[in-house]
Image (cartoon, rainbow, N blue to C red; front, side):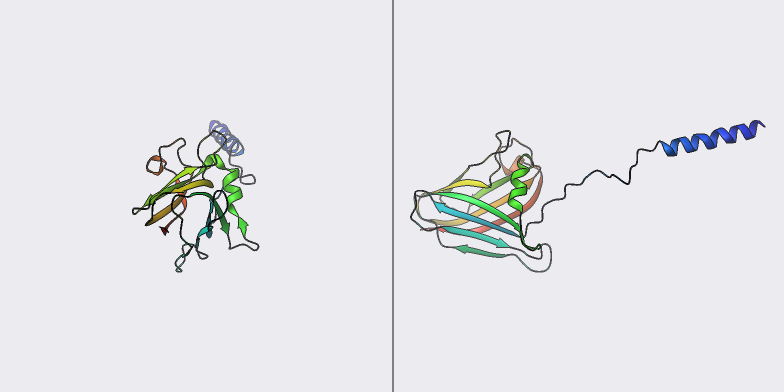
Length: 186
């Protein structure tokens, strides 16, 4: 009789524990997947009108597939000029292409663009748009050139960086897209 009571209590306890499980397979927590970015277009427009608009484009339709990204740089930058920069990100695996820039700007506290001027290029960059806490976002920026030179411009979008930060070196986070362009100032 004691054994029967013991087994009954054990079975009841087992049912109780199973019924109190907090696993809810019908309502899983939403997952915020990383953005799919196949194309990045950077447009550099001289302030004050006139001059030549320069575009830097990288396109990688197959992502991590065997095809290499295709880059295109239209034109050269002018000496002693301030450019307004704008970055547009697209997912061209969808029809029509999805404008991922809107998502990045909506989630501005979770993203930041970084710009790296290298290779002797005589230019500087400055952020022109910010998240709700006043930290840089960077889908808009200014680029200021000085004297003629050649070098590189690198653009890096980080997802969930540490904000505030002192730059790419201590930002952390995951890289959503990164590309380096060869550019000339004439």
